[in-house]
Length: 466
Image 1 (tube, helix red, strand yellow):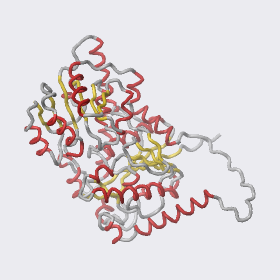
Image 2 (cartoon, helix red, strand yellow; image 1 turned 30 degrees about the vertical axis):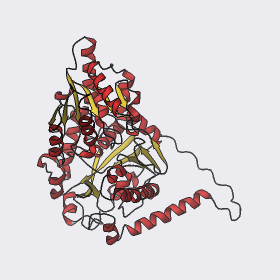
Image 3 (tube, one colour; image 1 turned 180 degrees about the horizontal axis):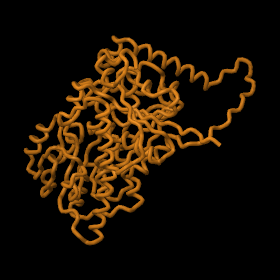
Image 4 (cartoon, rainbow, N blue to C red; image 1 turned 135 degrees about the horizontal axis):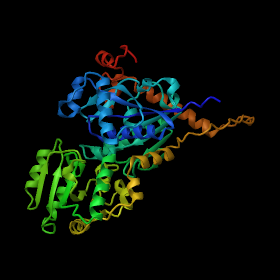
C-alpha cells in the first residue's frame, strides 16, 4: 500500500535573522519544532532585503551577497541553540524596509514562492502585516488552510503617535478586514492583541532551549545549597521608550524613597538609549545602563529578579526566558502576562504601591524551583503541541464527502452567501491594492507591486513576475 503524501506546512514571516526581532526568531523555532514533530514537510519563507536595506536593518553592518549565504547563517544560529534538528526548507520572498513603519513589507505576490502542489497549510506570522498590501492570488484559494498568528499589538504602538487614536481606529478595522478575508483561523498570543474574526487566544511560543538548560543548572545549585543568585534586579529590552522604559523610569523616579537600597541594571540598545541613560542618571537610586546583549549571556545568570513593567508586548519573550532561568519576575497585571500567572515565581502588581512592595520582597527571598511540568510549559515542544491543537492541523484521514441532498427550490445556503460576500470583499481589496496611488495613500512602499530587477537578480528570478 502506497504511503499517504505528507502534508506541507509553509510558514511566512515578516523578518529574518540576523535581525533579532520576535518575528524572525519565533517562526524559525516553530518551523524547526514542527519539522521535529515529523508529521509534515515544513518550509519557512522569510524576506530577502537588498544590500541598501540590509545596512538599515541588520546589526553590526552585517551583509549577505545572496539568499544562500543568509540561509547558512540562519541554520548555524539555530543549530547552536537547539543542536541538530530535522531539516526543513528555507525560501525567500522579496521585501523592502519601511523606515516609517520600522518594518519589512513584502514586494509582489509572495504566495508564488510555493508551488501549487505544496500549498496545503499556510501559517501567516503577523497576518495583518503580510496582507495589508497583498495583491495577487487570494491566500484561501491557493492554500487549503490558512492560519494567522498575531504577534504584535499594533494599535498600542499607533496610539502613542501623533493623532494616534484616529490612526488606531482605522487600523483596527483594516486589520479585521484583511485577516477575515485571508485567514481561516487566527491565533492571538494573548488578550493584549486586537480581537479579530475567527480567533482564539493561545500562547504558541516557547523559549530558546538554552534558557531551560540555564534554569536546570540553577536548580542543581539550589538543591546542593550553593548560593546561585547573588546579583539583584535587572531589565533587558530594546531601548525605546515604548518597550517598558517609560513605565519603569516613572515607577523608579516616583518611588525613589520606598525603593532605596534597590540596585538595578538596564540592558538595551535602541533609538532612545541616550535619553534613557540621562533619565536614569537623574535618579537617587543605583541604576546603571548598559548596551544590549543576548539574554542567555552568562552575565545574566546570577541576577535574581527580573523587573518588566512593559505592557506593549503581546507575550514578553524576556519574561518567559527569565522564568525558564529560575528567576523571580515582577510584571504588570495585564492581558499580555496572563500565560505567566501559573508560575509561582511570577509576581504581578496592579498598583504602584504593590510594585514597590513586591520588588522589595523579591530582593529578600529565594525563587521557588520550577517543577518539570512548568518547565515543559515554557519549551518549544509544548508550544508546538499547543499550536497543532489550536490550529487544528493534526494529520487525519480526510472525511468522505457525502453528496448533498437535493436543495429546496430557491433555498439560499447562509454559508454560500457568506462565502460569496467574502469573495467580493477579497476582490475589492485586490483591486485597490493593485493601484499604486491607493497603495501609497495607505502607507505602502512606492513601486512594491513587483520586485525590481536588482532583487530578481539576487533571488535568481526572472524579472517582471516570479
